[in-house]
Amino acid sequence: MSSIQVHGRCHCGEIEISATVDSDKVMACHCSDCQTFSGAPYRAVAMVPAEEITITGQPTEYVKVADSGNRRFQAFCPTCGTQLYAADSEKKIYNIRTGFLDAVAELKPAKHIFAQSAIGWVHDIESQPWFEAGANSAPCDPKSGRAR
Ligand SMILES: [Zn+2]
Ligand SMILES: [Zn+2]
Image 1: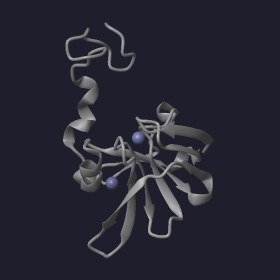
Image 2: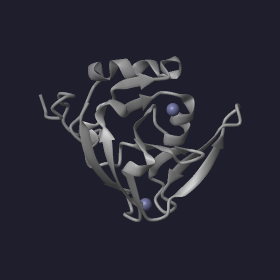
Image 3: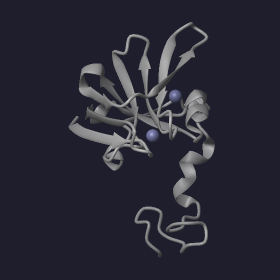
């Protein structure tokens, strides 16, 4: 395990978050709620205790009520919609979304959860066609992002 200092801001800059992340506590979640909330095939998070996170600005918090009655906050920027974190009802543990953090490239998931609802093609993305930038840019190597 290693400790990583992270900082990120939402797209419009209204909200900033800093935290200390344990590299072992980074996960990619493939559950159907993560797919819906993120609008993406899956979502990656870093789990941090409340004392390790600093939030500047006022996120909007949607309360998700599970079938079990369990309540979780799902926070996003009220202006630009960037997803920021989820937290338990007592706000003891925050799951920070890694996509808006400067250190996102270092935050490789230590595990993938909810494989039962994962989308099958996530296992195949390296073999699919990749392009340097937009859809009409040069075909490239998926790892380097450079034209072959
Ligand atoms: Zn924003
Ligand atoms: Zn999930």
